[in-house]
Length: 527
Image (cartoon, rainbow, N blue to C red; front, side, top):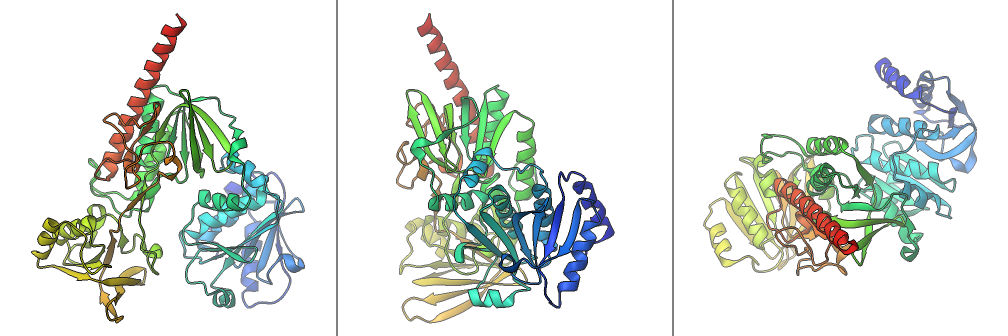
């Protein structure tokens, strides 16, 4: 299972171990136990600071395929039930490094929040070794355990524990349980996990702890194309800049293919996000990742950013670039097949379905516009509208009806998106009038039931339109002096990566102009 080349690579990392780490395997018998023992023993050959032992830890471990990490003889709280190969191998190596003293790449505010939790928490994360999203969840929970001795985190391979999967009726991974109760499922970000924890163990926002950072010139909320663009432009102006991000890259991170970013004929969301991070790293920008902004307070030209961790950032200006999220259907097969046939942007992803059959969910303006757009690229489009009549403008409806390859179904409810071998191949829906269920074969499903701007945290501070988008002027100025906004969270039409980048740049220049004008005013008043 572990190749010599992989062991050589691990040996390079284990040179940084600052204390002894033991893999303590629970005693007992299991058909896979010999394989796990060999796995751990070979791993121990990479460093004199690693050792393997078998010991009865009682209720601390699930069974004979479970092992715990101990650092200098002290329980780290990290457990693995199964053989952490595949995508989870990195989770194991990172846990070893962090347990031995390697610094965690977590924001200081988040660390303090987790450390201050005064309760016994037992996390169990059911995973699949082929799951791309599972390691992120396992790794963040392992760090929680290492930060707080009252927290434990167990990775459980569902393939080796089918009885657990069946008993809990688990249909997707990762699935996280906290103290025996369902805590989170599916793709979940570190900021979401922290926020969920703080819902149970809240920090009083009225007594938010001031950040160690000095007062900033600008704090940017959001690290998608708009936010990163704003941060780069602010840093180039010499402004003291902090970028707060729940998730670096935003929605772009989930985009499989991008062919409309000018000068880059073809790329992927992952590559764009990598480029954004590299570009940002060239400048002095403080990045506070995995942190959620709960509130913005303004008082006499000064602003405070209150994070979900209880931390407070003081700043002279704010740029809100928190983006938007596609409104989801909430049906089985949707989340797990994003990028595998489920899409939300016809302009972005339509070309990947040339001469294939697709569906558009939603009969409003965006849905019908998507169908018309896709009809010029794909083989056929089926529009599914929940209500008895389409909600789109008549002119759009007439255009759609004139296309031979567009079929419109009304009064139907999408029930399930079906996939095989990692790709969408069908959709199950219900005729709401008769209750009859049908399945239609297709290659892609475009969900077009609206966008939700991530503006909830400023709803009481800034002026929004009926859709919840922030209202801005031609210089990205909001209704509050010193607060600017850009990208998909604003009322600017056409949500595209290239447009968001431009708006972010414009917001940064506007913030710089504002700071200069304020400085001149203050100088004149002093004189």
